[in-house]
Image 1 (cartoon, rainbow, N blue to C red):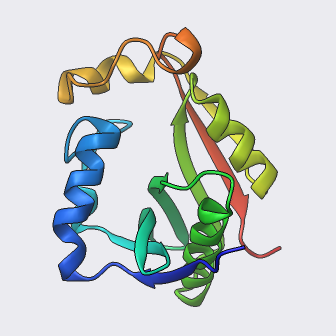
Image 2 (cartoon, rainbow, N blue to C red; image 1 turned 180 degrees about the vertical axis):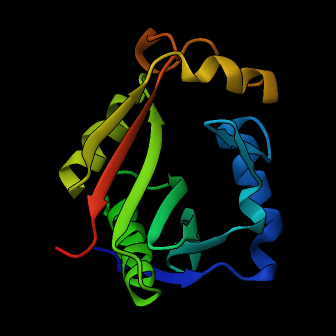
Image 3 (cartoon, rainbow, N blue to C red; image 1 turned 120 degrees about the vertical axis):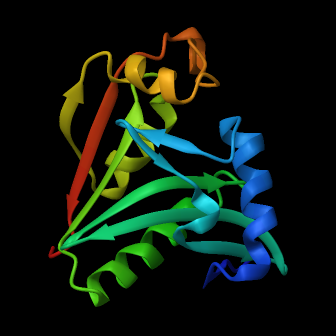
Length: 162
């Protein structure tokens, strides 16, 4: 099994992050509950295997909460996402955070399975939350994974103290 190494995003990664966002999210911007983020400007971690980038996590810290903004694994099933979350969680704890949070959409079944297995729990449903965000980012598709209409946000939370 290949070893996954995790490091902080550096300025030399900015173009790669922008390209990954365009390929993954259709824009260099990510909109979450009315908030616009540019992941290339956020704090984050990059996963590498064999000296090649294979994953990215970006996040923001506010008070004692660390919110994951993006999580991308380019090598599914190898532990890249878990390794990135572990590294971000450790960094968040070192900065005094006690809560890990993120938002995903109702269609993202794989993410819901992954995050719940990791230890997150469903905290809040925001019905039709995507509707307002489409005004800020029209690239948000109407239909997502498995043909499920993209309508709602789900907030997931995890206590970092446990």
